[in-house]
Amino acid sequence: MENDYESAKFNAEKATEIDSESGDAYYIIGMISEKENKPGKAIEYYKKAIEIYPISTEVYINLAKLYIKQQQYKEASDKLNYVLTKLAPNNKEAKNLLILCENKLRKKN
Image 1 (cartoon, helix red, strand yellow):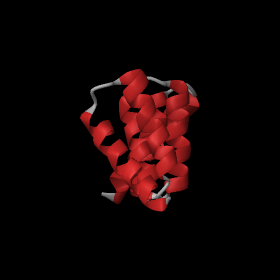
Image 2 (cartoon, helix red, strand yellow):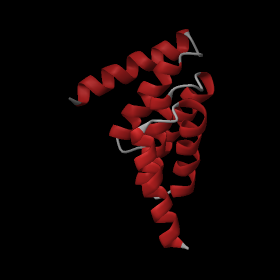
Image 3 (tube, helix red, strand yellow):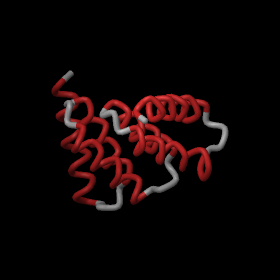
Image 4 (spheres, one colour):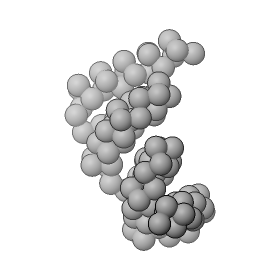
């Protein structure tokens, strides 16, 4: 399994060398970085994917989930609100995650 990730990451990195505007490649590297337990790198790559392709609901939601894992509920909430107001107002996953974030933020305060 690890070799599969290494191969996919290698290919995605090569894709970014060929086309630095390949949002899919950055997204793939972000997912692999997350699987490798490198959340900082994953966040960086997810943000780059969003920068290139700002209408990808999937990338925003994965970034929000990673923020939630990092207990960065405000950041996750911001991404989820964006999904629900600009991209996919009826996205159930984003709605449920946003409720989770709001509950966690209320408990903090």
